[in-house]
Image 1 (cartoon, rainbow, N blue to C red):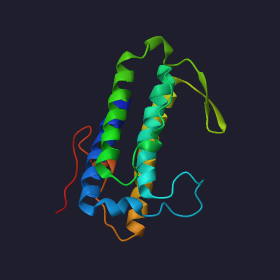
Image 2: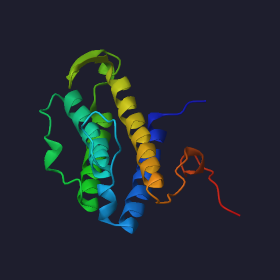
Image 3: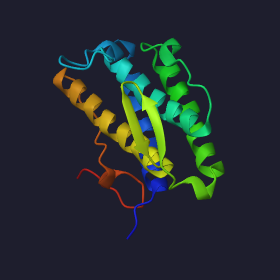
Image 4: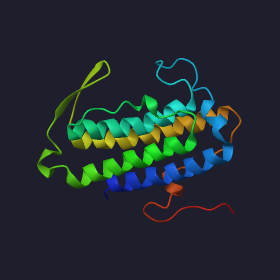
Amino acid sequence: MNLSLNHLLDYTEWQRKRWHDSLRNYGEPVLQISAGPNGDGRFEVIGDLIRHIFSAEKRYVERLSGRALTDTASIPNDKIEALFEFGQQSRKELRELLETFPAAQWDVPLELKILKFVVNATPRKIVTHVVMHEIRHWAQIGTLLRLNGFTGDAQDFLGSPVMGGGWKIE
């Protein structure tokens, strides 16, 4: 059995829609809930984490495409629609990369300077990281919201429509 990257992309797109809907229901003040203490200083509030999810996707696509990196600081961290429009753009660019990236290059290691790290990875691993990175951060956001009194929708892969099936409450 093979879980493909397309399954994970479909799952994260389903998650994005659910988060977009939930955050609109909560309202924009929810974006200003603290991301908690003891971070590395890059994320102060939930809006920063959401911008980071989409920024990472966009910047990895730019790195793999040989383009200059976008300064994503101009994307407001307190506007739900602006954040998710940015996410739509980053996902569109990722899908385009997946369709056009040279097949012979997917497993050729690259060395990338990212913040204070030098990363050595293949494009295949980098793209897989982008999707796993997003899943991990949505779980973090869900925890932060629950700790602040918000209930969330179940986002488990098992309950998603990806690969069929799902669940319902009886």
